[in-house]
Image (cartoon, rainbow, N blue to C red; front, side, top):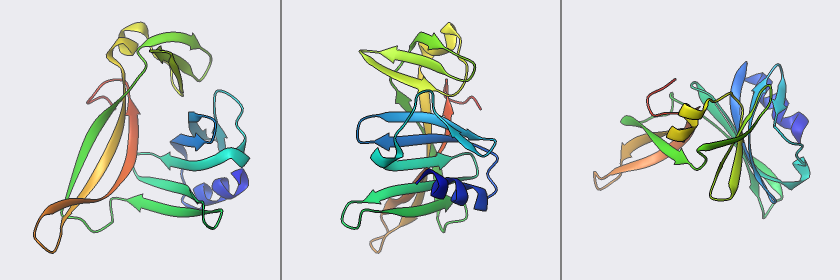
Length: 162
């Protein structure tokens, strides 16, 4: 599965992106760079249920279809038809640094840990981590505004930072 994911990433000429992966036994945040997906700890792609590779330009989403046992693939960018775009910052728990290495910082809050693929100082960590989600709006047949699609855009330490 990893090779298939890497092939599709390469088809879209992505140089660098964040990776959010859901496995049956854990959720991992990583980074794609130099034609590799890098997580802080080893993962078993046989346990993968969903993986989202994203940057400011697009998101490639693989979601396991449990009926077919195959992955459905979606590619979402700002070229999809919409009548409006709204970015929201969703707080991710973790505001105390409990570990660091060359590429990752480990944050902890209320028992859970998250490994993020960049360095963070104590002041930044105390403000918390944000997952930036872009929502695409349209109107339905009753002229009601609805979110028709969304994608991940960025991970930031504080709202408004790039």
